[in-house]
Image (cartoon, rainbow, N blue to C red; front, side, top):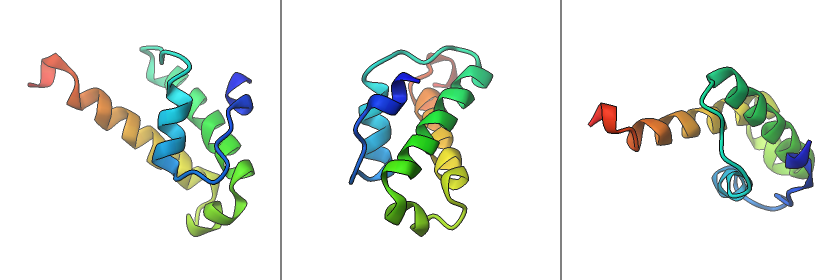
Length: 82
């Protein structure tokens, strides 16, 4: 996957996610977003093994955090929720 080519070494999760999201638009379907975020989390964990150990659940925890950030950001900028 393309996301595996993005250099996220040494970055905090939020910074790495922001960097990765610069390269493409997310689809509207939550299932597709989830797959992309899963790939991001696995790539992040592989590039940052020491940081990943801080998240006791490993890449699964990174996946949940990243997915939550995406969903919260979507809600924040949704005109339907204002």
